[in-house]
Length: 343
Image 1: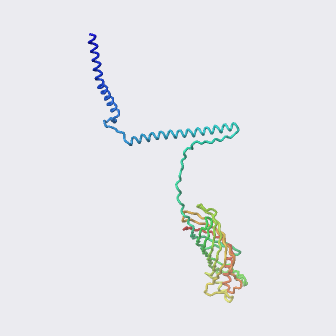
Image 2 (image 1 turned 45 degrees about the vertical axis):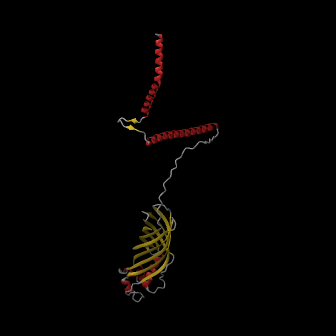
């Protein structure tokens, strides 16, 4: 029995060894099948296969790079904070010790952002030429003239800005005035011993005054880049003046018979030319780049007088030249408002 059992055991072992390669091979196939399942494409809930694409791999790589970059930035910030804390600690220590300690760091500086400003738009080219038509009023005051005012006072100027503050130009000014004269007529009668000459009501005469002024002028502006620009200036002018009767006194004409008076129908007149100087002060107001307003006050005084009544034989012309001389030698103050056109 023992011998039979031993034989049976021996046969079993031989059979087992004979079958062992097949068992091992079967186990290997099972493991490979399991790994294939794990390595196979994933199946979504809806039962579809999901395979990783190139875009997914790039997204993973970008995410990993972002994480690395964030860690690097945090490290740089921490390094800068540590250096600043160390520098502050050294300064405090130096202050306590009565010394000033400067630390030099050789670490890499933090990356700084460079802001590039957009180029400014070029400024519009300033218009340097001006035309200034103007109008105003002129008052005459002199030895025998008190508060005579002009009827028309109009002009036009052409100016050029040679610098930001200095302008030079040419101007034309035309002034008229109507004068009612009684004193010269009455004084003439009194000079001949007719004291009752003043009692005549029709001794009044009307005289027309005209003046054409051609001038060169200059202005200095107290400010350049402003909407309101005050200025001071001066001008040198050439004047052509005419005075003439528009109405002669009837009594004077009747009286003048035999006294070298011009009592015919001719209109007596007298004219002359002189040079004058003008000082002005005012301001210009710019509304836009091309239009604006100008306001100025002027004082004019003649350097010469061309009308001289002395030696004049004709009494009409003597009276007119006397009035013309008074007006030439008078102080003239004017207020002018102008409209500026730039080009």
